[in-house]
Length: 166
Image (cartoon, rainbow, N blue to C red; front, side, top):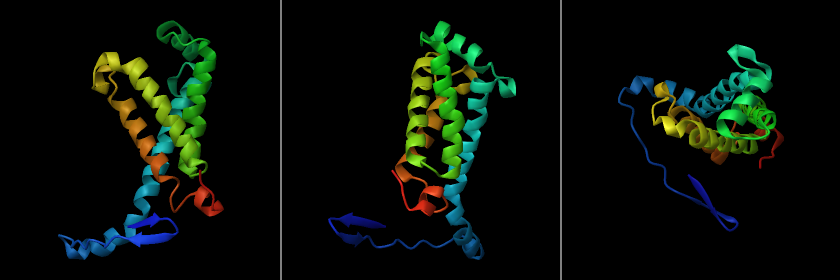
């Protein structure tokens, strides 16, 4: 682990672990670099259909008008269509950006904020479990988005390719 203090880098000693099944160690080492990109890509792509439901009415969604009506009538978010477009756009376009690793941190922060609002404004009254409409699912996605915001795009991202991150 490398930490920086001023202009000098400080390196913490690496802790060596031994595989319980030594024959699997090369497989683990080979696949480990794919772990974070896998999380980032899957999280991003899993958000896209939820945004498409709100924006376009795809996948059984209600589109902007229907979602906007729900936001206005049930949540008191006026104008409902604006908030539906913002929520749907955050999920749809933010999900694509997170999956690509482009503008990763701002997209992930937007998703984290959206999920915090969803958890607190929509799902909290239903308790914890998502099977009862609770906040579990929204909170999990919000925390995953927050972790992605902390980490950034990572090695296999457009941000890294461009050499620029927020």
